[in-house]
Each structure stands twice: as structure tokens, then as C-alpha cells.
Image (cartoon, rainbow, N blue to C red; front, side, top):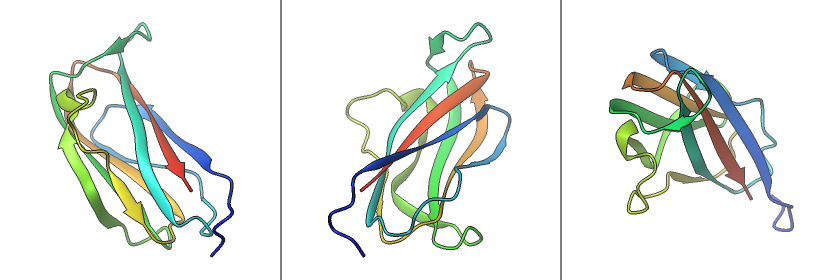
Length: 116
């Protein structure tokens, strides 16, 4: 494990249809990760706050088995609240996943995962 790694950022984009959305394969040399942001958009591309729905952020060391992370599940309507705990994980991970369920008031999303 390298402790002098330059931080990196990975992205997950998709529509808000119920389902799982995954990052590209990441370097496992990073020790920590956090969901830096998730933004939701309407059909015109304007940022919106969903009125309902669930977001679950998980990480996988092998791209097959996904594990829960600290504060990884939250209400989509709370996505922009400064008081919401940021989802974080530690240990090697190859793939990040965003699972969406019942998101209302948005048609797409963009999530940023920081690794360091």
C-alpha cells in the first residue's frame, strides 16, 4: 500500500431509474475513499433536489462482492444537506457502486468518489 499516492477522483453517472450504477475499475493501492458529492438533474440538465428516494453507496474489493460503508445509505432528498455524514470507506476497493431506489423529482445523477 502506498502512502504517497496522489489523490484521484472517479465518477458514476446515470439515470435515476431504480438499479445499480458502478464506477470504472479503480487502483487498489488507495487506502481510503469517500463519496465527495452526488448531484441530481432534471430533464433540462438543471440541478434539482429529489423529493424522495434512497441512495446506497458501497465499495467492492473484487468487483463482485460489495460491502457497506460508513453512512452509505441516505435519503436522496437529503443529498445536499451539510449535516449529512459523508459516506466513507477504508481498505482496497476496485469498484464503487451507487444503488438508487424510488428517486422522484430527478431524471439523472452525477457522483464523485475521491480516493486517497
